[in-house]
Every structure is written in structure tokens, then in C-alpha cells.
Length: 435
Image 1 (cartoon, rainbow, N blue to C red):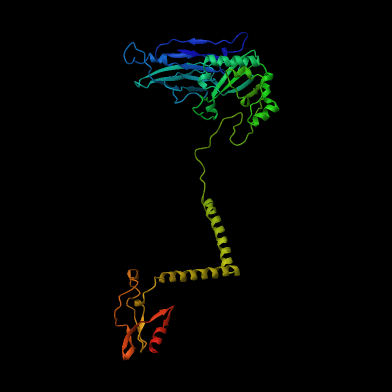
Image 2 (cartoon, helix red, strand yellow):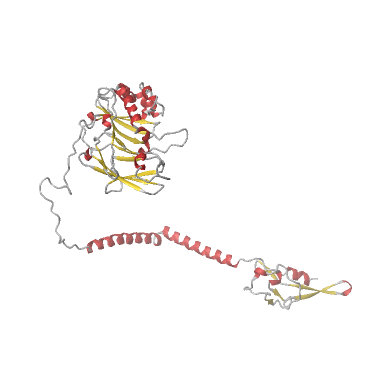
């Protein structure tokens, strides 16, 4: 089991960069103790090869297996990890990595992380405990901190000791500090970035924060030039003289670099404004007595009902005066009444509107006496199924009038009385009688 401890040893001290890899051999279910420094990057690798020995061999003893293994990490007694500790594992066939920067509040407090390995083939588990003993750094925090955004790297690639060492070496050549530490590493996805498309081997990007004990170099200060700031605002790549020292392996987005000088940050003491809810410096808190004084809510209830009722009554009176006593209101009421009356008449007319009645159903009259004979069908008769033309036949209410033919012969003609727009149509009958 390989554990990367004390990334502060990867520092730009006198001489080349040093990388310490500590190998810890332990039994199953035994605790592992690590000693990172606060404010310095901590990396712990969960190697699948180490956990394979805790599961039975497959398919038979003596043969190597490549079972899918995943890990679950949580703080003992809690469902998740501490806020500063992150975990990543891309696939069940890759190693898991715990990484983060311990905070100053965790110094002297052992943090126990439960690591549970799951064999996805046999559904067996193995549990180990990782005890993180955070130590206080002598020069924590480093006053000058720079955060770089590397576009062509994923977080697990950047956490590899060789890659991180190469990056710190490039930063040291540009910055030339006496002490250089990797403070933290964050995936771009944790900063609101989007998952890249799976084309052209695109990477999600990673933020790397480093700290040093000397001011920023002139090369790093070039990003603050007005010309480069203008190019960044136009989404153009700024011109940085030392970019070629990174370009061979790391593609840095210089528009997203962040330079923080903690020596210029003045701590502003917040003066406490005493008031309600803030206890004095001396004395003890005295809670209210258990026997509280009874309160009468009748007045509040009456006010709650009386005020809205009074306002509603005043508004009703004003509206009634306008509508009933003012000329404009009366005119509006008359118009409203006229509209309602006209609407009712139109509705009554629409109810009586039906299809045209055939002539055989219209009322007839006697040509001599003028007596009106009722139609064949009453008003309640269903005329929807009535044929448009009826069979010609002699009916009791029809009148036959003789007409003279040639050589003294007569022909009987039948007439019926009908109305057009309520006016009797007698023209046909008059012409017949005048013959």
C-alpha cells in the first residue's frame, strides 16, 4: 500500500525537488496512521492490488483476477467525509484517491476515515481505517499564493506524484522561491465546470494552488497588465513570456490565474454592536420564568376584524353612491339593463328560430268564409325528420276552386293559405277568383 504523505516535502528548498513515498505494510482490518501538515496538499492512494489479496482468488487459487473493486470512504460515525477531504475513482478497474488540504482546525484532532472495499463480482467487502493525524506547519500559511488552471489535465492525472512534481518544478523555475508547497488541487467540475465532450481526448481541467515565501515574479505579474486584461475580456489568449516553460506539458489558462498576497490583507476587527440578544461580558444568562403572564387577545382579535370590515364598508358605500346617486352611475345602470333586455330577446328569438316549414304544414283558410284552418302539425311536432316535400293528397282543410276549361269543362285547383313574415299571402287566391 503506497501512501503519498507530506506533500510539503515536494518543496522548492535548497537543491532539487524531493518526493517522499512511504510504504506501509499492515494486516487486514488494522489502522493506518498518516501525518499530513495543515495547509499542505495531502494525497492517499487506495490501490486495488492491495485489496485483491483480501478477496478469494478467481477462478481458482494461484490465478490472477481482475475483479471490479470500488471504495466507499466516510468519517467514522458520519455518512460523508470531512469538508476538506475529497475522493475520486474513475472506474472500478482504477485506483481510488483521497486528496485535500487539511485545515488548521483539524490540527491535533485525529480524523478516522473508514474505507470499505467492495468486490463487484462476489459482493464481498473489506474494511480498513485510515487515521489522519494533522500536524501544524511551521510557516503556515505561506503568504504568497497562486492558483493555476491547467486545461489539459484531469484531477487524478494531476495527483500523480511524477506529474505534480514536474508542475512544481516548472513553477519553481518561473518563481524562484526558497520554499514552495502545493496547497490544494480542485477539479474544474467542483468549480461549476461542465463535463467535456468525449471527443479528441478532451479533459475537464484542474485548479492547482501553490504557495511560496517570496513575492510573485515579474512573469506572473504580466497577467495583470492592461493589455493582457483587455485580451482576456475579448476571450483572447494573453501574451505571457514564461508560458513556454509550461507549454511542453501543461496548458495553462492565464486568464484564470489568481494571485493572492496575504501580507497586504489587513485583518479588520469586527466591533460587536451590543443590543438585543447579545449577552454582556460578565454575568450569567437568566432565562425567563416558567410562569408567564396571561395575555388578553380579545383586543387584537377585534382590531383584526374591525379594521378590514370598516374599510370594506366605506368602499361599499362609495361605490353605491356612485352607481345609484350619480348621473354617470345611473346611465351605466340603464345601459346595463338595456343590454340585458336585448340579450334576453335575442336568446328568445334564437330559441324560436328553426328550419323553414314546408308549405303543407303552414296554416290554410277557407276562400269563402275566411276561416283559418290549423296546420297539419302542431308547434311541438319534431320537424327535424319532416321531408322537404310531401305527397300530394286531398286533405280536409284544403279548398278546391273550379276553373273553366275549354269547351265548358272545369278543373278543380287546390290552394293553401300561407304567410310571409306574418302577413297572409292572398295574391294567388285573388287571381284564381278573378278568372
